[in-house]
Image (tube, rainbow over all chains, first blue to last red; front, side):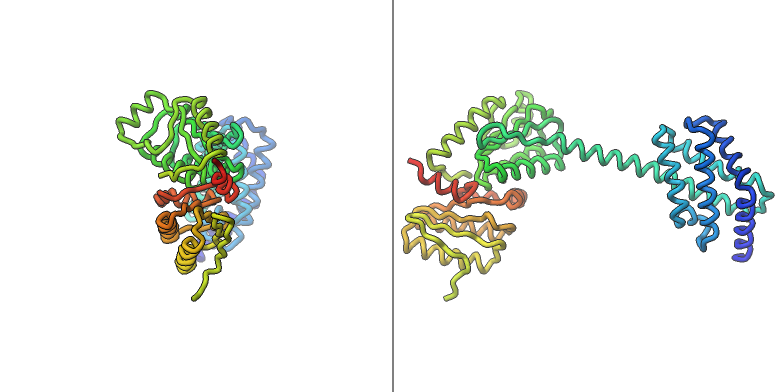
Length: 282
Length: 118
């Protein structure tokens, strides 16, 4: 059997090498007939030539048929490049995979294939189409993660509001990851600025559940451990109701209804700290 | 008698000690011993523990700090933890070790200034 396979592979390689121009033009014509995406025939020609060259090189290496597309790095890159370029032009993953698949009839069209050879071409091109699909998904995933990170960065600014007073205006839903980042950046800012009071303003937070409350409590505890005070502000009547209904105990936290009230309280605390001793908290 | 490698400095009625990078169990216990003796000898009113350098506080060290504070209170002195790093504060908060009854300050300077008030 290995002999048969080897013979089939050599036949396919001969067919591809001898008919490069025909395969390329057939493929380009197919793509132009589909008219997706809007790429000129010349550019398509270059793309397919690159892929065919790499395909030949890959076939020459000692790799199983279905591993040529993943195992031969230049071929993998050529297919990934095509996938990325088309994706940027707005092609759907189906269109890209279909384009790769259409190499199959283009190659088989210029030879009288035996069953073994047809199967080989099938395995080869199927794997290549999978690579293109994987590339598409990966690049999407990368975009999503980058946006996620950016969202985290822009959503947690620590503002130096007054002499030795810091504020964090929180906007949007708080989940564990965000609460963690808020806590870290706030505490680091306290250390950097030697701030006496930190105000956490939750005017822009739509809901407070037990998890969020837990994180707020932890932040307050950590702030106190560092030797600073923490004031929670911007609790809307709706959130106050929610907290009361859930039975969350925020009694250990200094709370004010608006940021202005919290700032007044913070300035009082700064002055007080400058003058008198502080009683043990907790 | 082994003495801990943590020096305790006396400034009038105040004792100041700078704790080292890592608080292992033995060091902390020796330090607690030494500190209680020094408070008794000097009749200090305030003990400031500088923990700026401390990078890790585990649950045992946290417990010992609370015990030191309680012990000092019995001897008539208050304990102020000064300069806790934010990473240590986060870890303690997440472990639920809020160190109740222990005073805190941003730095030794703040701890001393606060005391100097009327």
